[in-house]
Image (tube, rainbow, N blue to C red; front, side, top):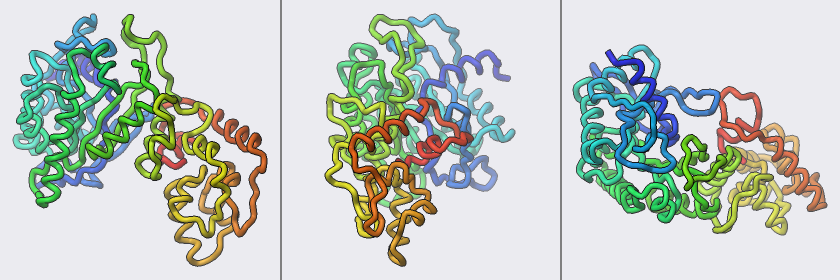
Length: 418
């Protein structure tokens, strides 16, 4: 029987890691097994602060040999400590699954004893889950920097997804706030995993594939002085070179006191803007240089697409019935799904503003940048357009998103449509 106090300590300690999402794996159940991580097998639920709760999110231990300034579990922190054995985690996961509390596991740990020892016990845990308990549900494992590469690859053939968290956007900040870590200790494992996944894909490996749901990472925003432009440059490089599924951003919250850290948090609006810019990079064809200069921060007044459009008013308005898809994707108020709908619908008839409204295009924004059959209903005054978009932007509350919010801005951000 697991001590409830241990469970409380280790689940509370795990809440600061946001780099877990449970989509993308095709691991199916086997006869006599438990769980299913295929597309229909992961049930997404969201807490009021927007985080997924379909996974049991827990640390193996919060006893850490490192002393990272920003971490509430750092060696010098005066907090209760606890550690679970592999068998205890396995029993907890299976029992929670049987009671329909969870559909998968997100397992992480502070670095206790040594990186290799920590990674070895994490591997032992998921090996027992897969082989002894025959658990086929989703497993996301947090990689341990400086651990042996053989242990990493062993874990990667058992887990659905792994994450090596970059934490801070620059080597300089790592040296200042997390001197035991280095960029090399985080980037090299990520590159090795990418190469292994590429090998499996080219050779059409079907059994024991490396990370069928890919890998992710996380950056803390506001604990160090890097600009949004620098953060997004790194993000773009990670997507293109490491083929990551997601880069997660966690707004710095001053939960520990340190002279090397800011006294105030970064605020959720900055985190929100970075997610919006991230979506533009991944799905809308934007380059970072178009969104934000290297030493600049994203505008708090407008979402990144509106900010780009205001800087490039000479490109607008565009005609809905003839503009190519790439152009439509850059119009504020037209999301990716809306752009594809427009391209399909205009094959059969010319579209007007009523048609766009039925497609749920956000005409409050889009009308300033489009014409329909040559008609323009936006404002000719740049100052009025700017004011209109700014007023709409101020109506966005900086909050973590909830699946159950009735506000359209939450739905927009959850789907990534801008």
